[in-house]
Image (cartoon, rainbow, N blue to C red; front, side):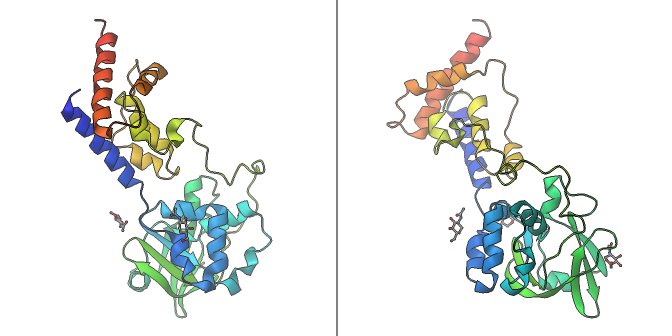
Length: 279
Ligand SMILES: *[C@@H]1O[C@H](CO)[C@@H](O)[C@H](O)[C@H]1NC(C)=O
Ligand SMILES: *[C@@H]1O[C@H](CO)[C@@H](O)[C@H](O)[C@H]1NC(C)=O
Ligand SMILES: *[C@@H]1O[C@H](CO)[C@@H](O)[C@H](O)[C@H]1NC(C)=O
């Protein structure tokens, strides 16, 4: 390990962190539109806002305060399922919708990614009708209940917020079988309570090539992790044990620059590798 490998490691970490940064903040975007304050609050309460922010290409079918009432009094997990089906995993603004070639199409929603959607509940049916563009659940036989009322925000080709006339409720979505224990479903799967939560994983874990690279991937939202992980995660070497980490704090954590610590880390890693090779 020399300066070349160190800078590669640095670049890899840099790419990792920039790939997990937010493209937008749906909470902030909607806060300029008081008509959607209830919808906006529900996105935050259900944790959907965070999932939306972790995407780069998305369309939200927003329901204004006077039409969102059908959700009031529903349990939060049900509200989350229903609203998750209002988040389309593609960019559609009004122009793109008008230019749809097919009379009718099927759109994939965030709810589909949860793996709990039944039947076609995780998909929407969008259909051009003489009265305009209509949305409904893609579940067979479900009615097209919500009409497109206009565009709220569009930032091509990342996020579009469209106003629809009603909440779209997929048949059977209120009846998902084994109900998870209270409290559990709304929380993102907790990352292991380790140093992954540390605010500065780069500085804290300079040692092995293998171990520290994977650590930061636990911090971002679950939706992001697979993407961020893909390009650089390499199978850990057999000698990658917590013992590697134990050597790290020997370097005073506050004094040195990140890059010099990476050099130190590289040296330790080389020593470890040599030791492992049986010298
Ligand atoms: C918009 O999305 C593209 C990928 O579709 C991404 O490369 C780009 O960084 C995003 N723009 C912003 C401002 O995040
Ligand atoms: C998004 O914006 C809201 C409102 O401005 C703010 O409270 C929240 O902290 C922001 N979220 C992130 C992750 O920056
Ligand atoms: C969408 O719904 C309409 C009305 O129920 C139906 O006629 C159409 O076949 C559906 N479109 C698709 C692609 O399934």
